[in-house]
Length: 54
Image (cartoon, rainbow, N blue to C red; front, side, top):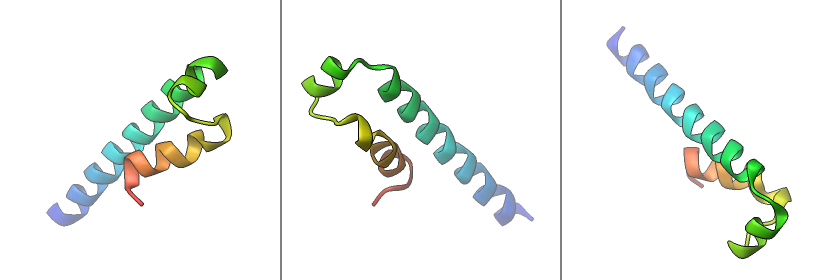
């Protein structure tokens, strides 16, 4: 039971990182994204990588 809870906690934390990264990047202007060399179409991929790795 503890293993299931630990896995659920890790999954929840990773999901939170994904959503936070997605929201922060989505809120940026196109100019700000260009300054950090991020295309708007790449935001989901970047958020996924930040949360779950490659």
